[in-house]
Length: 130
Image (cartoon, rainbow, N blue to C red; front, side, top):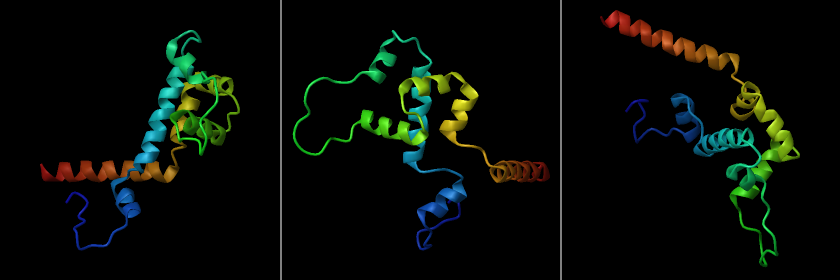
């Protein structure tokens, strides 16, 4: 009801997300995961979360296709972000503002305008209703 979308209307999920000004769940999970990884990378090297992040299990894997694990997911995303090693990612994480931009993506000028315009309209309707 909030978005004025009812069941007979054929509206795609992308359109609903655009109207709600939100992103996919997988994108939200990815952002939160990398925010946490930035927190861990800024930790001291002797702390357990930092050790666990770079720890590699020993031994042989079982036969068959490799399982999709948190570690493999993060390693793939790290490569896509342009970091070849965890030390490069740790260096980037020390710059908090730069890390936020890298994890969240740049705020586009039209997004700023849409947000400010939306807030202006809400404020205007609130003032007129009083």
